[in-house]
Image (cartoon, rainbow, N blue to C red; front, side):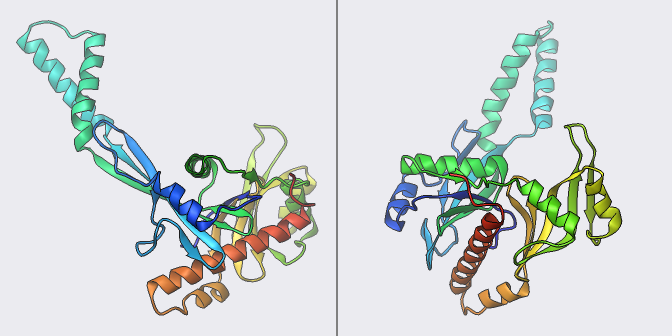
Length: 292
């Protein structure tokens, strides 16, 4: 599983594989039953692995969610049919409260037979980090469920001493990045204030004068396309999340050396996790280190 996006948390301590496996087993996924709208729980990261996929020094886990899909149009059509039937057969109007009661009754009848939609959030614990293949609320949900399963888990956001936006703005202004980072072909800039317009530039030379001029006029970088060590390309945000991650041939070809799906999954998890954590460590250094 190659992550396409990533939100990272720092872990002062990483639970052992046996402790983690036992904890996740107590919150293993089961489909929603009866009148449940959704259910989530931990599932096998790969079809051929247990709940914790141990590969080298990495531990892969997966949170699976199933939710019922009950289109509002279906409920409203059935409600209209029943209201019309009552009005004709009983020769009386149907009031607002009765309509609401009918609607709840229809939902209770249809919900057990509704289709389900499945989603999953993958994560890897490695080298003092929790890497999650999601951002925002979905990443927070996995962390919350993991804490619940373990009875607590110290995890800190990747907050640096220096503002990521300031660093990215400096790189764009200078026309080059520091360390082993290179500028790619995407940037999003914002002005001061919540109502300031956003400028997005894609598939262009971001070092061109007309692009840099936005910075000189006071805009700051909110998102910046980067390449690291000629092995991974991604968009870094001012919240220190990564999106649109692309793993270049030097990495993917190395992972394809295995003869079986299990061997390739093992290799890809190790290579991906080690690449992301090494890159994060270098980025932290350029940002003055992580805040405790």
